[in-house]
Length: 105
Image (cartoon, rainbow, N blue to C red; front, side):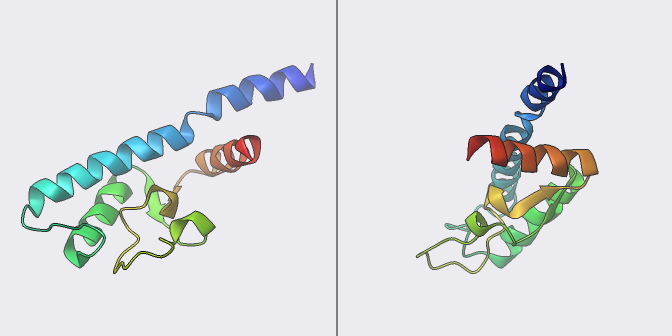
């Protein structure tokens, strides 16, 4: 019975990362609208700050501890457009994100 409960909870939480990616994409689009002359959001400090502020507004904070947060081999000034650099503000959201990462590994 415990296994079934954990499986059901895990399936519910599997959408966490997808929601996060969707929010980052929305924030990137808003940054592109706000800074239309910026060709590369990874090189733009103001656009990166805009994305971070937008993500805070929807319940995520910037955290560069995830190894996927670093843009390996890329010339970047900001990791803020990278979805892996955000963590949910809520405790349940963080647990769900860790569980999802563990299940996908």
